Amino acid sequence: MRGRLIEDRIGFDRRHLWHPYTSMEDPLPVYPVASAAGVRIVLEDGRELIDGMSSWWAAIHGYNHPVLNQAVRDQLEDMAHVMFGGLTHGPAVDLASLLVEIAPSGLEKVFFCDSGSVAVEVAIKMALQYWQSMKHGERQKLLTIRCGYHGDTLGAMSVCDPETGMHHLFRSILPQHYFAKAPRCGFDGSLDEDALSDLSRLLQEHGREIAAVILEPIVQGAGGMRFYPPLYLRRVRELTHEHDTLLILDEIATGFGRTGKLFASEWANISPDILCLGKALTGGYMTMAATLTTSRVAEVISSGDPGVFMHGPTFMANPLACSVALASTRLLLSSPWKERVAAIQEHLTRDLSKCLDFPHVADVRVLGAIGVVELHRPVALARIQKRFVERGVWIRPFGRLVYTMPPYLILAQDLQHLTAAMVETIREEGA
Ligand code: PMP
Image 1 (cartoon, rainbow, N blue to C red):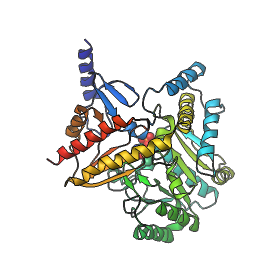
Image 2: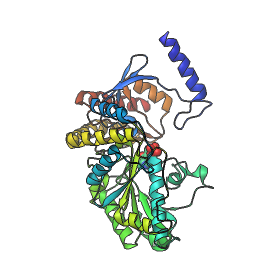
Image 3: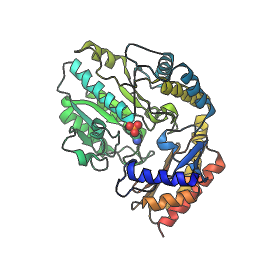
Image 4: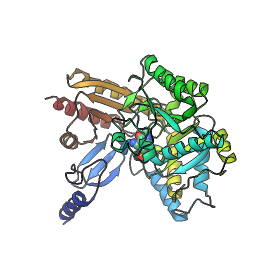
């Protein structure tokens, strides 16, 4: 009976449900999930998969965590939601207070929004409104680096990599911004002077039009899973000061410990003018994001015309999401996350480097709890996904990249299983 129901659901799913970046005519297979707990995703057919993805950087504490479940339950007893226009509540205030405390210095004003992409839209609008209030409405352009990814909405897409970021499909309606060369890939590498001087040149030539520089600090995620050295980021901060423009850091993927620092900007010891957070903010429980900014930016926006910041989503500061985000962040801060991430880094470095022996592998790179194996050619997603599932792990490659970012509390033996499955499956790809 249950088997039948599941078959019906999969059939309906194939015919009617869109999944991320898939065709409705020829959808890739999907695996029905019954439940998830700890680092395990349990499929409807009873198979258990060790999670290597943290549901796209979000579920840092794994699934079904008792502390996070309790936070949701407790909040539900009080209220699931109230509008944020004209009302406020404890979960929003306490979460904002914690974020201001732990965020890079100077970021004191918090705007809660719905998702990572919206946090980026909000950041862009803050930068534009700042310059309008400064009577520099001509500053309407953004400057970013290639290979970046900032989300799927129009404003966010306009600063995604023009080639790999869906950008080209929508080019005619996207605002046109400036793109500098991406820094050479490698966390430990020397400073890429060429890439930096390209960015510097663009600031020199177009600085008066540029409202902000926006980039992902240290790790460029969906645009290529690339790492770059902290010194590059430091120099970008210096250049934005020199050219009197704002710096937006998108820490939606890197925030909350993933790179080995609580925020990746700490590697460079810098603070941006505007910071975007999302994904792991709620421990992967619900969609919510935050855009933080300095008192200076907030004051300027508030002193201009119309004197208010022009954004206000229906579900702004949703109490359930705020409560679980507060619980997740407190849980993270009270856990030995640094040691856990360091142990994952050590393991990933040791095990994934075996892939360097395979001729079809171009690069292996690891930073914090992120392990990336880059192949020379794109993988056949449906086939490789099936092999991972057969080996009892959940890894979702894209393009030429097979990568993992497991929940921080993954045990050594599960991590061992995960990386062994990755190495074996990648080895087969070359056969
Ligand atoms: N910025 C970065 C760096 C991201 O990795 C993502 C999501 N992959 C986003 C923005 C967009 O976030 P969301 O999917 O929650 O809209």
